[in-house]
View 1 (cartoon, rainbow, N blue to C red):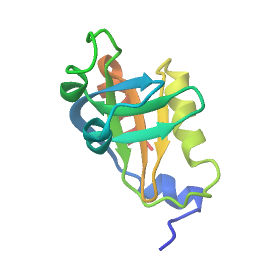
View 2: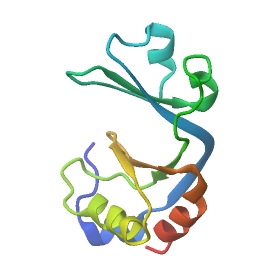
View 3: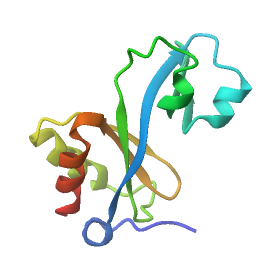
Length: 129
């Protein structure tokens, strides 16, 4: 089942939803083990190492706790992986407000990770679409 690729329809139908949990990005050159990787929100393997995005609660058992905290905002519209300009429109507006964003595209939805302390502002901007 493919998603929508018409940017006007995507922008009209998108509903931004803020997750209540706090997230962190972690990396390791040798991975984190099956328990962590199976509990992570995202696992991505790069040449330099494995990156996981995980809830802060799980991360506290792995780190010193000094990592930046991120909020996850899900863009609730089934966007096609080949849709052109959808994420660009979202991230441009956040950039205009000085909000950094790390975007993750999955099969059904796009997810934006924004600084925890700017989450409500980011959500408001996204809901204005």
